[in-house]
Length: 156
Length: 192
Image (spheres, rainbow over the protein chains, first blue to last red):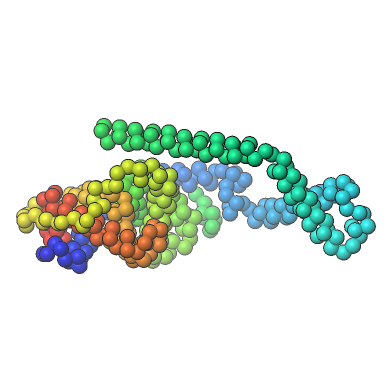
């Protein structure tokens, strides 16, 4: 056989690899699987993944989540109205809540901008430099540790 | 023992199902991850998933294919996680020595060395030879030759280019032939 012929080599290697039998699975595998299945089945439903929850509980969860979300939004709007930022007359208009929500987001955004503008630039650059330095230091320590462990393994 | 999807599943049925496929599932994982303990963990996860779908699998003629696909996917996920975690550090180390030009294969003279061996010994020699390949050659080689995954699918799943997959598999074959030759095997004599 010409060893430089890729097609022949492919065929040969394929035949060799496919001719070898499977390895024997560890003797304890079966016991481990059955024990793990039994352990998972013994768990209460609330400790299993969401897909294994009873259908009624899942429906309740969705309903509850929707109610909580509605309460949070209503609460935020109430706080905004009670702060006097919006006239009560506006609340009676249809879709007034959309305008209220938009105003709330706008005011939050401008507040954040004000806070950002109040921080001296030097502080921001300094904080970024410190974070970058710490990150580089962490990388260097990890790389050194990895190479040391890897070297120890190779020379062991 | 209860099946979550169907109410009841006989433990005896599932046990005999496992007994039928456990060697194949374990071998599939072990060839990819090259670590027996991790392969056993993956095999365990495969059979737990199989148990959840036992209704369908117990009567399906393609149960073996399903198990093999799940074992392959879980093994690749495991390797991907491991690779992401260590890629930065491992790539700081020197590239593997077999990453250069394609290895010149020298075949040993035909002999009867393998003719006197049983299948288990032959398997041990081949598995050891595969284990000596670096990950970037071994994984595509195993996917191509054992799992029948085409080149483009391997490239997609490993997130590398098609050209790299073809080159890596080509080099892996050459390296494998060289390792087998060094072990005294003649390629033709290893074939069935």
